[in-house]
Image (tube, rainbow, N blue to C red; front, top):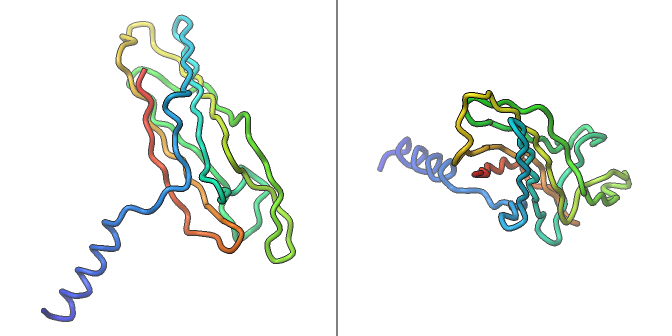
Length: 150
C-alpha cells in the first residue's frame, strides 16, 4: 500500500467515526402544545453526569458558547425559542471562574404555520452546538443533531 493510500485510509476513518455525545434528548419528556397555527414544543436535554457544557453567553475567549439552530417543517417558521430550566454551575479553570450548564435544560420552540399547511406527522429538526468539559479537560466542540415529530 502506498503512503498516500495509508494517509487516505487514516483520514477517512477519522472522518467517519462518530464522536461521543455528552448531551442527549429526553424523548419521553417532550411536550407539545398546539393552538390554532401556533405550536409550542418543549425539548428536554440531559447532560451526562460528570460533564458540563459551556454557557450560552459570558464564556471565556478560548471556550465556545452553546448554540442551537432549527430547521422547521415546510410552511412554518420559528417565532422564538428560549432556554429554560437551565442548571448553571460555577467552574474554576486555571484560576478563572466561569458559568457552565450542567445536569439538564429545556428549550421551548414556538412555531407558526401557514393556514393551508396540513398539521400531521411533521418534524422539527435541529442542531445543538456545544463544547463539553469535565474536571480535568475540555473536549473539541460537538454538534448534536435531533428531531421531534409531532
